Length: 202
Image (cartoon, rainbow, N blue to C red; front, top):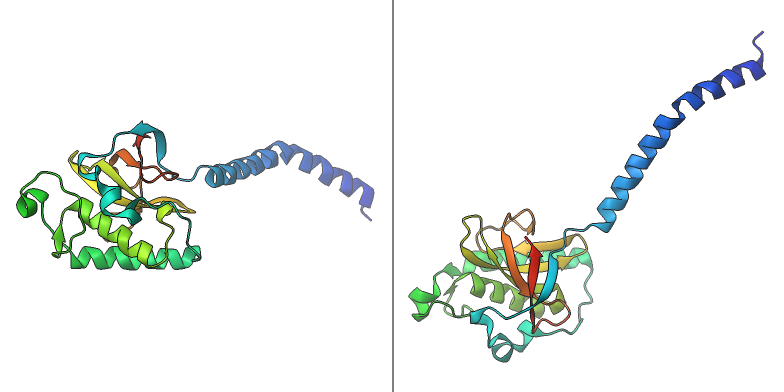
């Protein structure tokens, strides 16, 4: 008959041999989980900077565009569904036209009331409709970027629990800011949307 004490001792020695590997695997998964939880893909904000030329009078023209009241009573799931719906609806409804063609000027930020506008107008319309549907305006920030062709562009950023998500007029797909491969230049300050801040890395 096998001695139970002897078997237990052999098993203990074998397990001790694997202990360093077990500890390594455990540490790897704990580190990965911690990294994922602590490093959400948020846009890196830097110092205060002057507003884009077309947004100089934005707060006077549209007070809701610079509101900092935290009024949302929606769940994250409700917010995301509203964001997805409005992003797609505005992209389908508004026709892309440059400010030069429509207003005879290079830069003019306004709601696309005539059913057409450029990228800033798309972003403004989305922000307006999302605020009207109960989203916290401090989670909705207009940003200026250089697109993948390094041309000037503007998007609306939605600050979710998963990080900063981008609502773009060139696609219905909502991406994280890093997935866009855009170079982010400046964005409304989340704490004071009437101010703008420089993006430290894009």
